[in-house]
Image (cartoon, rainbow, N blue to C red):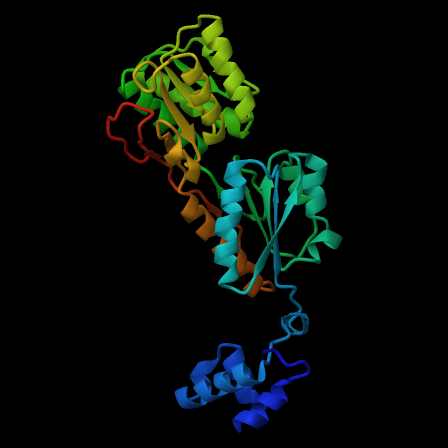
Length: 345
């Protein structure tokens, strides 16, 4: 039972030790205390119901104990799973994750990095969608920031990137090796921009070039970002009698919509149409059939984000050059494609 008003001095007196000894035990400096003394202090803490005032301690250290994560939307499966991974890793460093939504708006992204907003956090993680290098370079902030996102944005901040081109190339190459020749690309974008759709389309096109297989422009379907759009896009392909023998959906979520549309159309997966997604969301193991997907090494990305951020927080006054991390993507083959054996891209 927690007793109100119990202080560190009360614990020290009851345990017969100094307040410094109690502080060492509470703050993880147990190497300075014998095991017997440590156990006596912990037992006294439990008996008296003493609770550490984390807020006060963090304020004394000039910390809030909070890390912000700003993402375009909350309903994208990838970002919810990333947040779970980050929250677990940050908790190991006594940091709590707080999420914000930018709606993929340039002004909202920049607003999250404004000085008044950042004062609430010890560190911040921003998924960059609309901002560019000039936007980021003009910011004058001291809070440690790690950028994540689909594209490289050269700036003074650490950046953890996804291997979009390599992952899309590997996905398309797998379909081509499995006999596909008319691969519908859901969410593709043929431009020179450094956006996720454009980068993954680049990998798709390069795999076709490497295999000497031509691309029908009618199979590159843009503006497909959600499950409903993918469902309607595949229904339209079927209704318009456009021939296709595979679907590369630029996210697992849109692949789910494609699987539903194919099932309703009586197209067997993978016998008639092979399907592959990107992100390797946890739910992809449970679709019918189970979805083959590009695994961008989600765990390694979360590890890198946490490691970079914690290091910056601990050494906030020490100048360190910005670093860029991009784990290699690989294919997780399941039932929605014909098994050919895949390799990391």
